[in-house]
Length: 94
Image 1 (cartoon, rainbow, N blue to C red):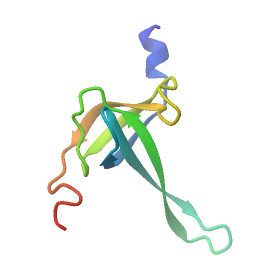
Image 2 (cartoon, rainbow, N blue to C red):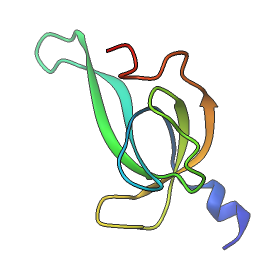
Image 3 (cartoon, rainbow, N blue to C red):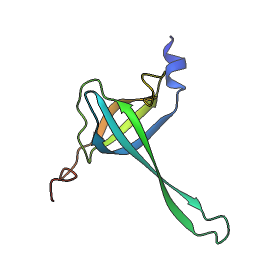
Image 4 (cartoon, rainbow, N blue to C red):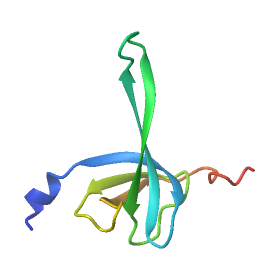
């Protein structure tokens, strides 16, 4: 596969919510949409399962994802890089 085709794939940035098994993370992709009747912007989120080959991402980290071929029943994304590490890990303050 040429590099030009690979760069045409979708990329997203989200926050790691949890680690679910070896080399798998759950990432929350946050976005806003206008309410259909009132027009106010409403927060929405989508949870994506992503492949983390290096097991580098921890909960709370911001990661960049790239769309890829189906790797399992739910995994369709893979981690390109960790853009920002968490100040305090999610769940550590409990």
